Image 1 (cartoon, rainbow, N blue to C red):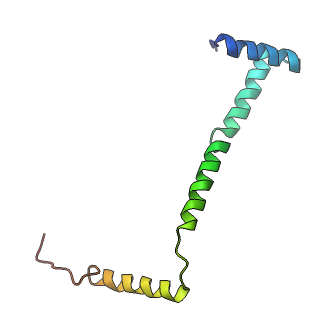
Image 2 (spheres, rainbow, N blue to C red; image 1 turned 90 degrees about the vertical axis):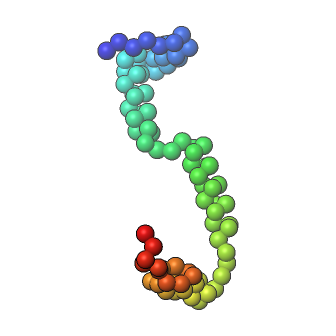
Length: 94
């Protein structure tokens, strides 16, 4: 395989290979292994953004007694059985 690298990346590769006393191809192989292992995971910035969004959402959940929530859910279930919250379904409409 042949790859073209910009000057900055090529310099980083050269310096890293010299510092680690490895062949450039070995540095590239290790870099690819490391990148492949992380490719499916969130970056730290993405993880923090998602955690903030979750925390914001959780704060918006109303603090209500379980019995009140259960009653509302039961009302919704009953309404769905008859076609909605307002009444029965008109089956003559398309």
